[in-house]
Image (cartoon, rainbow, N blue to C red; front, side, top):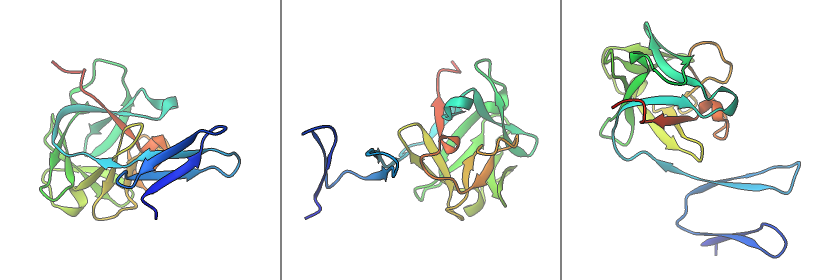
Length: 178
């Protein structure tokens, strides 16, 4: 019966998760550590939010629209207008990322993220997967296209990165507007 999972934690202590808990486990081969990450998704629209990198070494980076691409820049406060995004339901469990200033939508284009004037479904539709450190945006037309800054190219990438890489995780900064 797999309705519960138990794992030793320290000494005689143990970790118990109920069957209805949706988690992903990571077991590290070089240690006795097992980490559990709860899986969930965004359930409502979010308006005028700044998407800040959860990557600790680069958590000063925020997603912006720069011309016709989704890019990023360092910003600790006083965000440019192009840093504000609306996360809008597509009605099918996924979301559109719309720049609040230009009203353009983030769209998959190869391994890049561009901005287009209208939502066209697949290329502009993103699943929002929440994690311990933030949210990941996974394109609905290509599950290997995850918005990230892993290679620090100057523009957002849409490539496959492991779910625990914080280069693909974004925190929502609501305190940046009134």
